[in-house]
Each structure stands twice: as C-alpha cells, then as structure tokens.
Length: 231
Image (tube, rainbow, N blue to C red; front, side):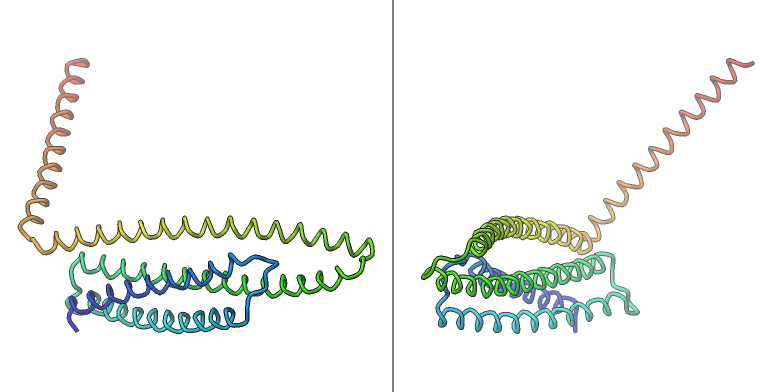
C-alpha cells in the first residue's frame, strides 16, 4: 500500500476516533452530573449502558485499526527505501496521536466506571435514609448520616473539579494535536519542494560559513594584538 493511501486512512480513523471519544465523554459527563439523591429511571440506565457498551466496542475497534495502519507506515519508512525524514516524522506523529487517544479512552472508561459505582452507593444510601425517616433514628445513626451527607457533598465538589480539569486537559491536547499537524504539513511541504529545501540548506551553509570567517578574523586580530603587546 502506498504512503499517501496509508496517511489518508490514518487521518480518517483519527477523525472518527475523535468524534467517538467526544460522544463517549458526553455519556460519562451525563453520569457524573447525576444528582446523588435522584434515582435514575431504569429505562435511562439501560439506554446509558447500551450507549456505553456500543461506544466502547466502536472505539476499541477503531484504535486497533489505527494501530495496524501505524504499523504499516512504520514498516514502510523503515524498509529498504527508508523513506525520507519528513515521512519518518509523520509516522512518529501518528503514533503519538494513537497513544494519546488510547490514554484518553482508558481515562474516560475509568471515570465512567467510578461514577457508576458511586451512583449505586448513593442510591442505596438514599433508600436507607427514606426508610429511616419514618422513625426517629438513634443519635449515633443520625450523626453517621450527617457525616455521610458531608462526605457526599465533598465528593460531588471533587467530581466537579475533576470534570473541569478533564475539559481543560482535552482542550490542551486538541491544541497540541493541531500544532503537530501544522508541523507535519510544513515538513511535508519542504520535502515536496526540493528547490526550496536546497535554498534553505544553502542559506544555512552560508550562515555557518560567515560565522567561521568572522571567528577566524577575530582570532587573527587577537593574535596580532597579543604579539604587539608582548613583543
């Protein structure tokens, strides 16, 4: 398979994974945003679970396909022709994007599972509190319930902070990917225009030559000055 076709497939898969991760994050956010004392209807829970399972399978399949494309790109640039420097940088960038997407997916799965466990705990606590409201609970039980309410409130505040931090992290990663894509485009453009590349190399060589000449002139001047002072 040609390099251009592999790049096209990689970009298409990356775009699709990005969309799926956004949908997956919305499913997790809706779970995290649930009120601790509101019982989620069974139909809504089933719908969320179904969406969660479908998105998990889709994202895992897309990540596996993207990994296979990256392996083919790596084999192509490390083969007998070795590709050029631009292709090697592009293959490395696609590998880094795959790693970032995989890490984001693992983090979102962990957050979703933690939110689901917390909702189960809060739901059971809510039922216990409703039962105990019919009779006046003992003092020790009342203190435990109040302490549990404080812990639940602190947990909700921490969840809100983590959600905000996750959103900021996603925005920074998006900017990071954009900068990498721009760098790859510039490298690819430089490789596609040999004349521009040659001119840039000549400019670099002339800068180095001028630096060497200036250094040699300064060195000669210092030698003449020392010879004049000590002769």
